[in-house]
Image (cartoon, rainbow, N blue to C red):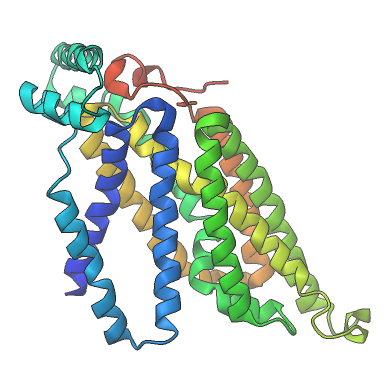
Length: 360
């Protein structure tokens, strides 16, 4: 049963981002993708709140209503126009686009543009010598490398693993403050930061938010690691023992809130958004499956090994390592990640993805 649940959840986690990317106009695509993250975090908060007063069997029965409601809602949602046109279903594609844009919208120009550029994309691939060469073309390999790189940094930064070890980490750094209270505050701030990201992502752009995210996370991780080192090594030999218990608890909490906000503003939502934006239509299902699978693999390895790293190099060493990874993430973004703000998705420009390279 658990395997079926994991299989279904991973498939939905991949499909929803691609679906939103294909149906949204460029002006609101980033905002709609952020809504997915916001609602996901809202669901976590609801589950945590219900879990405080229910056992796991009761909670499982309550949340079982969610997939049932999802199934019923999907009965009324059309397939994306791009996917229908790719399979030659012109009339259904027109009906889908009209439903998405509203009964009074003029969809002729948009439909013609999608049709023309899907044809250009097919002709472009037909001109390639051999199927194996097509699979190794820059239209697939470069987006895979970029999205997998972002997924690596998204998962291997401390913000991801902190969600699993928030209470134990706070127990090691707090002297008076309630660790469970700190975890709840962190979760609420993460939700608010995701809302802010949804408002900024289509106005400011992807790259500025990713850069700010990298800088803020590196500083916050380094600060948290320095506090953990000071607390562990010098706490019994300095004036810290002469102060009131918990008088310095605000320092680790501030660091945690800082990297939580930075993660939720940038690398968290934008890395998943780019999965749907960078891949051309004919490779979108394959590319998104590869990137998402790699993301979950990195998440598993990170969560599984975090306790081991903490054992060998200490809590301070673990967060200093995350600070170094955040700096590498910033360099990766500056050198390799393209700005997609306001761009049509790639089936509108068959040459776009092949041009992806060091863009500074």
